Length: 117
Image 1: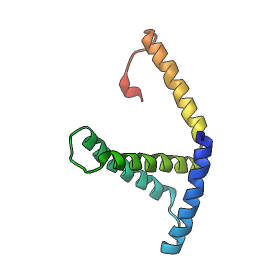
Image 2 (image 1 turned 90 degrees about the horizontal axis):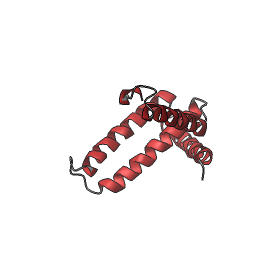
Image 3 (image 1 turned 90 degrees about the vertical axis):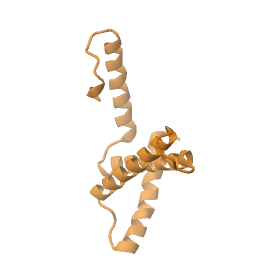
């Protein structure tokens, strides 16, 4: 399954969530609420990564981290759709830009700075 197919499947799941949200609260989540949920998922993933790196003790951290990473990828794909961004095109553009920048840095054509990301 390519990224476009994953984005389509993600939207199908989000549409089901929207039906549930409307049933439970009378409205679906806004883009801002989806963004805040993504940040919460990233925070949860960070704690699990710390456990994987031996800095925290969390049972089943690898399985939980795998789940959180799936949540994060899903949320990014949904937000891309909400903002009319083609996720595959965005990722390919970034990969090409990074590839070109790294090659130039390796050749000494531009200054190496890891803070440019």
